Amino acid sequence: MNDLAFKKEVLGTVEQICEKVIAAIQPIGFGVLTRIDFDQKIKEKLNETIGRTVVLGACNPKLALEAFKQSTDVALLIPCNIVVRELTHGKVIVEAVRPKKMLDLLKDVSGGALLETVERDLERVILSL
Image 1 (tube, rainbow, N blue to C red):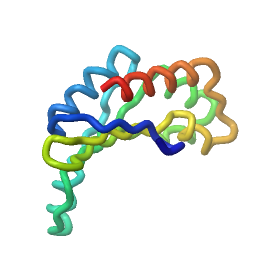
Image 2: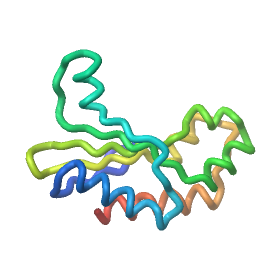
Image 3: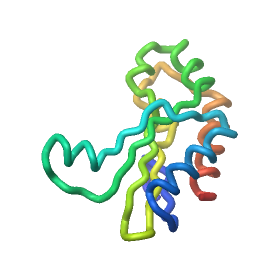
């Protein structure tokens, strides 16, 4: 696992795993603000073909508001991306950016105890898929 994201390889289709991710992050306070079917956009805009890739723009509103109150620059970093990408038929990788790494870009923002909890919960959820 690299330092930027939590990663987990799982069995299933991209659609199945997207549904599981969305359901799994809700109990820990995250919701999905956006969904980008990245492979389809690349095909549409550039007529290039890449593997099935979906970017879910996730957000924890409590953490986002706490950080925003410290610096409105945090809006530049919202949402946190969770990528669901097909590796091979029936095998998918889920990658979720670490909230701490996002906020590290803003030196005047301290996530405090909420950030620690959110990061720990998100890691647990992604690794449990």
